[in-house]
Figure 1: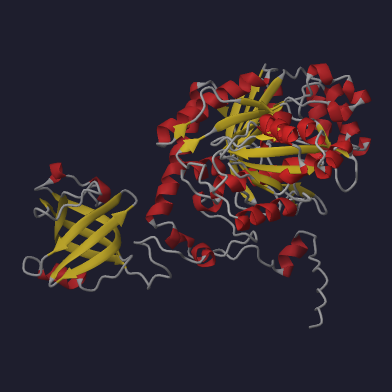
Figure 2: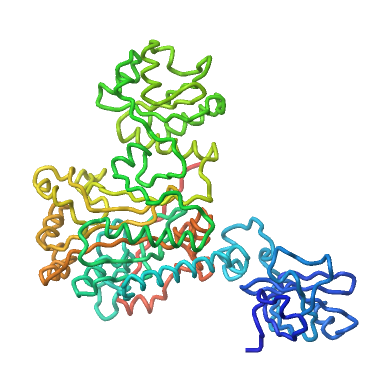
Length: 596
């Protein structure tokens, strides 16, 4: 290569040395004849000075430059004049006095600036992603992603894991989302499915005696998108043999992600060790199975105290089998106007609650309900909440599910309004002991909460025949700052238990054999106890990078409509290609226009 070093590597120790650099024009500044060019590559910036007296031919080239031209520059490293140093960059003590400059490739006018962080329409950014990725923030995100994956690979190797590839084209499996299907030319009418995760393959690796497997796995799910979802994503997939206690997997993950956070960021890991929170406790205390633990604001059940009052809203909810639950916001009695309270009320109503009871405690308590309570009833309620003068109290009286959901969202909104969630804290935690089953809201049938390969707790196996909704799963999640980072479980390794659970889910014998016959057969050939987890790499990097949307840390993501605006995907396929695959595309019926 012609270049001597990267642009961001030039230092004072190179003064007097002739070097060659290659990169992009970040900015050009003409100071009355003396032209300064900031040359950029992924390592950073180097300032190039072009003097018309010393190098007139080079100056003539420099005068034609525009942003993002690709250059090769040869010159001598010199110290910058006193007072012109730039301490904000590593190369800020020096500059390169150019003796030769070649334009390797010019650039069209940019669709948006690269040298400065400005608001750019996301459609434009996605269309010109190769330009977007040159921006310093995006380049930092790419570098952080690389370092995160390298740290994970090195750690997993040190713990005795083998990295093993698993197929991208396999058979459909029920894992909570729609599969992407791939038609087979050689087998007309047959389809492969892209993996939602390598779930069955990693379990089969355990049957094969691999003992410890991992993979930086590409996964595909045809589901509606949001800030932390993409149709294709990357996860750390890992599995361990001869583990039957979730703690074996959790301890490894805690060490991995604590070390990763401390090594690759300046963020503070809040908990050591990480909390283990039962699913039911998470829902009761935080109204979410992915609680944000950077702040307190815990939800408190005050049904006993509230139900004993004469206030019919509270009393009626408890008598109907519901609950009264609330949040105490310390010192916030004077921080919310009536307009602010109305906004909080609207939030819980949008979450299904009938309303919000509130009280701002102080010398003169302001409240929507205190006038309906006797003095002793007030004291009992404040005691149940741990509330005192200066606190704001917010209560919901409704069914258990509605109270959990509405107060969980209220808790998040309060933290946002009061700026309680510091981006400099990583509050890692585990949520454990999930229910194995839940009821499908549409059909009323039993379905799995995690996935159908999760081992129930041994003490709960008898409940499969009598009360399956009470069966606990050896399932666990990693959560951080209000986001689910990973799901995992101790797996079923016995064919009889696996087949029984499939039947409870309503799978027919034919479906069981077609979709799962291979893994049930494998379990009968000496399958060891095993368990694993699959942390989402995109979500981890977005947290470390302080990005709200995982699209900012994925090199070439799809947009909110699952489109690739740069490549034009998805796209129609030529009729000849469809014919070769023995399939035809059926267009949905046109939507009738609504009369105006």
